Amino acid sequence: MFLNSEADYAIRIVSCLVDYDERLDAASIAEKTGVTLRYSLKILNKLSQANIVKSFKGSKGGYVLAKSPESITLLEVIELICGPITFSRCTGEAGECTHPSGVCYFRQSFDDVSNYMRKKLGEVTFERK
Image (cartoon, rainbow, N blue to C red):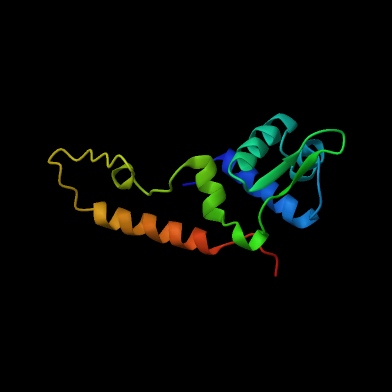
C-alpha cells in the first residue's frame, strides 16, 4: 500500500515551504520539489483552499504557509488529497461490506488498523526540530 503521487507531492510542497520559510513562486516550488509546474499549481490550489497555504497574486506573488509547521499534520495533508484514510472499504464512511453473509469477522480489526494509522499520521507535524 502506497500513498498516491499527488499526496506525496503535496507533502513535498508543504515541506519545501517549511524549509525555505519565505514566499516562493510556483515555478520555484516546482523546481525545488521536482514536481511539474502544472501539478504543483493544482496541489497548491488545494492546499490554499484548505488554508494550509496562503497565496499572493501579482508580480510579487507566491505561496507561504498559512499555519505554523507544528500545526500541520501529515494526516491533514494526506486526507486533503486522498480523502479519509481507511484500511478497507468496509471501514469507510459508506461501510461497504462485500461479505456474502453481511457478517465480516475482520471489520473490527480493519477499523482498528485505520484508527491507528490516522492517530499516528495525526501525531506527525511539519515542525523542524
